[in-house]
Length: 549
Image 1: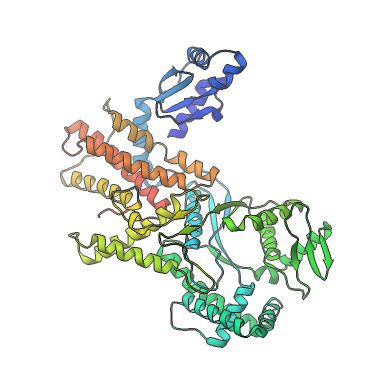
Image 2: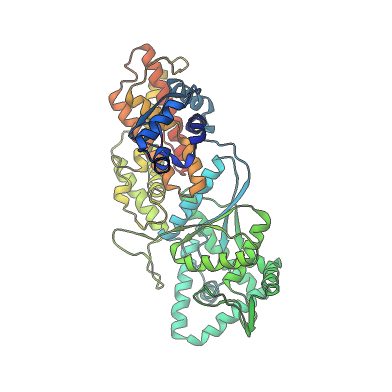
């Protein structure tokens, strides 16, 4: 609805309706700063220009209640009809509210951790950003596919295979068993460096399709992925497809991309095949002397495939991949292919410090999830609800705490995950939003028990707090649109949190069930619309919208 109001404002401003100069404002529902730009050209003060524009414009929209010129700003205020229609549209659209009716197809690649052990907390920041972006694109109406790109051909995977050959697999969770084999193999290589030759042979034989070696790699990688999928499932994340690097060797796309690069005279053949570009910090090897390819070679092939099948594709990568991503993108651009849009995220730490080393000392995502679940169970221990429901609520609260805290920080900022703060029901957390949703559900349950006719929002009954809440509810599609354009899921997390906070301010100041008849129905309509927005918002964040807490 806010998008419609915005369109009406642009239309009303006519020749001055440049949307680059529209701002959300604390002093109005929408403000234009166009007068500040025109003031220099017209050699007048912004106030004079704004006054003149407001005098000229004619408001023909039912959704614009008034327009004011204030110190150079042109302030627009929504009409009561807009507020009424907002509530009714939300109640009518229900679970579809927020849909933008867009078309198109998009591929989102995220997580893509090496299959040599369990996910750690850095990986799950990647996963949560990617999954949230995918959910929001899907809500907008776009056909979304998600990929996990499996690095099954790297040296680390070959070392893992060596570890499984020499030490077998323990009965731990599959990805943890693989990590154990990987760590043991690294120790073995330190004491027996001559085994490096065997690692190289494994890589060569796997790329050349040696059946026995392929079976070993497939077994090791699938074992790791089995555990990784279990971990992701615990935080409500799935991928549509797991795409293996080796597929692009087997299906001819690596040969295809090497041919394109060669035809463009980009490859220098001097034993190894090398791409040299002036603005690269170092040369890019795309084929070793022994004929094997490198990660970037297969990734270029993968992105050739992406170009053939999708008009838009997004990769979620750690900030330490910036140089690599710039090299990949530059090469793709030179050969006339579209590079990926990349969301870079900074690293995650815990209050106690770093969480990962090559020696196998790290805090896995599994450990973190389990720790947060135990703490959620402790917090809920005194609640008067049966044990099974308490367990389910604790799990939903724990998953919500992790997902919300990981996504609410802008991707480009480093973050520290503090599970004690993430589970604080009084702070700006997922549990606070879940509790707000449960509160709205509770109010409506009690209203039904007392006999509630069809809800309606009508009559000039809006207080400042009601108005502020309804305006905020109108903006859900607008914030979904912003995420599509900016690829910053944190702005949507902030929006959902602001809805919860504003709803609680409204509830604290306005009796709902105890209000007189007409006012009661009016406020129950606001509560129900808020419930819908909070539920839809939580679901887009991958968090369960609890009805009881």
